[in-house]
Length: 88
Figure 1 (cartoon, rainbow, N blue to C red):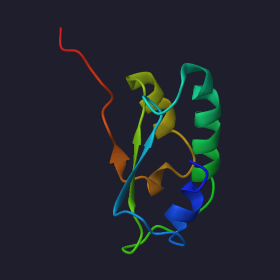
Figure 2 (spheres, one colour; figure 1 turned 90 degrees about the vertical axis):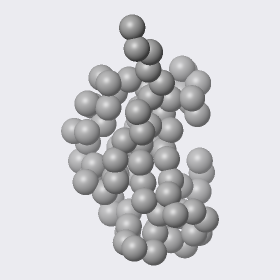
Figure 3 (cartoon, helix red, strand yellow; figure 1 turned 180 degrees about the vertical axis):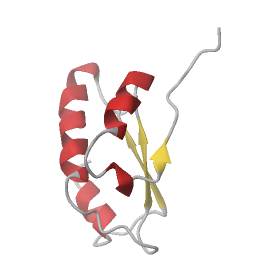
Figure 4 (cartoon, rainbow, N blue to C red; figure 1 turned 120 degrees about the horizontal axis):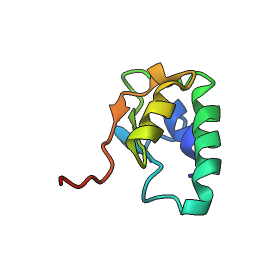
């Protein structure tokens, strides 16, 4: 979303919780760009405090979640939303 930085900084408050979705919200061809944008977003302070939305990330897979968990600035994320899974 083009306004993610504004929303997270509080200059455009719209919600108490935000999910940065890298699963259904992105076409397969946009995943690399989405990962780069997430890394860029997390590389700077998000300004998250009590008045700003809690931020969660929804990865496409366990492997993607592991990669995201190693990004610089990941401590600013409140948690992960589990992607679709099948119990076999």
